[in-house]
Length: 139
Image (cartoon, rainbow, N blue to C red):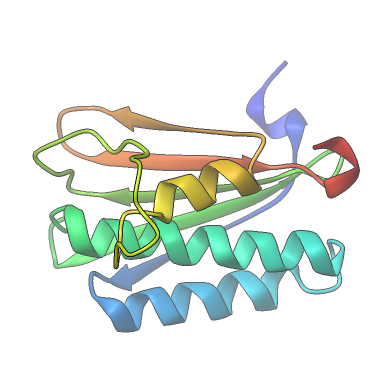
C-alpha cells in the first residue's frame, strides 16, 4: 500500500520561523480543513499546529532561508496528520512535566493529549515533529 492510497488530501506551506509564522500556519490549517472535518477535530488540529510551530520557533533552528515547513494531510477514515519541519535543536523534543505555576513546558503534553500518536523524525539535515489526530470517536 502506498502513502498516496492512504491520503485523501494534502497541503503544505513554508512559513517564517517566528511567531507570525505560527499564526499564518494556524489560519491555513483552519481554512483548509474547515468543512472537511468535524469542528472538534478542526479545533484540535489548529491547537496542535500552534503547539508544534511554537515549539519549533522556541527550541529549534530554522531551515535554510529562515523558514519552517508545515504540512498536513486528511487521511482516509477522517484522521489528520500534521508535520512541522525545522532545522532541529540541541535536544530531541519530548514531553516534560510542568507544575501548576510553570509558565511553559506544556506544549508536547497538550499535543500528546489531543493526538492518537506523535513522534520525531531526524535525517541529519532537518527535524520533523509529526502528530496524528483521530476523530474524537476513535480516541
